[in-house]
Image (cartoon, rainbow over all chains, first blue to last red; front, side, top):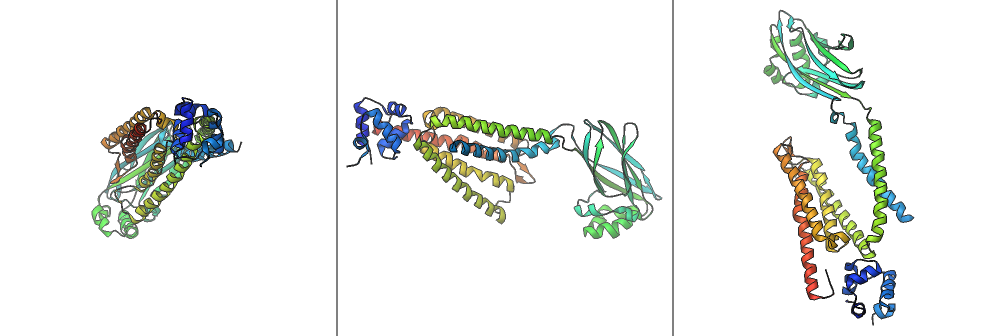
Length: 64
Length: 364
């Protein structure tokens, strides 16, 4: 299941996948995999992404 | 800390395996010039009225380094090639070849007078030139008796007696004796080999620690998980291929290939499946971030193996004893590195490009 919330939050800050990847210390492919729903990140990575994007875990990763 | 210990443990295991593979090469003296001598020759002996002609023959050799040497020598009538003969002692039948080794000053270093067909012993030799002298003693009918009653019964080869014409020495006649001499310097290279082994262990540990420090930053959690899955798939593939190779070996399905080649080849399906999995799942940064460079690197490695394969094929090393030997692995590597891995890299790149086309955020 695609993570469109993450994608839109990243786009709102005008960050590319590569930019976000560098800020959270992972590969671009991993950010891509998270957005495509191919990979479930650990809580640590979720927190790192949330900090960079200024969002909460619920806002980015909670499925409604 | 636990991770570091794991890394060190893995490195030590890898170093041990490499050491076990490499260490025996340190013991192989023939790789060091001057430490190994092997000589095969033959000598025609004529018997006239119970007297051998020549009465003796000589061969010379030179030792470069002082030390202990393993000395093996054997003789047998030309045409016989059986280990059964080694246990025989023709002196029982009064046909005797004696051998003695003298140094450059004529001092006798070693002497055999039992007339044994084969001699295995250890000699302390100083650097210098040596001469081996073979002397023949017999009397009428001695060799015929030896051949007919002793040798042939052991070999179960009456036809050999006809071929070789042992009867010739029963009266007057001639016989060709084939000699084999092997001189091998014993291991004062053990210390050297152990040092090499320890250096390999140390280098592996340092390399492991370096890679660990490097990869800790280079790879993220997803890639580590993917690599773990890749290892599992690779191991299972390896286990299956090893089982298949065992079956092939036991059932002799591929008689044209040496067993050790099959067992070596068994590693490749596991390795290739691991690499293919990692490429497909982007488990390594370099594989996908620098895919063009990695692909070119693969091709270069493949070309190197292809050249080695061609060279070996041209020099006839590809086949030994009528079977494919280890150099064929170079050809296998060439196929893997020139065709399979680049194809996987290109395929992944194309699929990534398509994804980019459908999703404008999937930048390459």
